[in-house]
Image 1 (tube, helix red, strand yellow):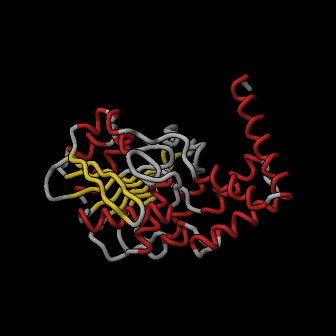
Image 2: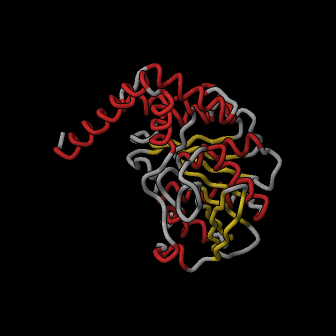
Length: 283
């Protein structure tokens, strides 16, 4: 293990130890700290004056939803509209390598910045809020295709579960997690948090979103999805386990599961994009 990784490992474990100690003397503070660390992205924000080049020559729109606002970027094309939904600690610029493949179809492409990412507002990210942003964008643009990466893919699955009757006809999910409980478990293991912290975090989600962690599952939501789709996941993904993609695919009757190798979590690959394009535009 390199010195840099060793320092990071010790820092993470010391933060976890601090939260564990805090859970006995100030459980509310311990919960606030652990929840904040789990839901507040450290990177992914971009300012208007430092927009990545790929986002500069686009039609930019800002939408307001409750106390939030979110940003979209549109590459104008024909009447076929595609909505792109990025993942954790990212922003709409992550689609730079995907765009040329989609633009060959002549489609209009819209990318959305997630809560607390890109130019969208907020400090906290969660899938239910992201699904609300997605729904506003779907109502505005009426896309027939939606493509989500990582936790953005999970938000697309959840959105389709909540809103099955929209303009969306096909969906593509890349490297997406299925179970919120798995994400929480991984987070707890990384910090070596005690069982009390898991109970507190589960209670927080139940109070905030009215669901138990075990019930928030892409595999379960996918059973209700009626549209066609692709679920692609890489065997070497170290961010979201390959088995998570399998869970989503197992519930989705009209979903085709594609296994890739040596692409990691980014899933950028010409052959994969060509297969996706055939599914979207030729079938």
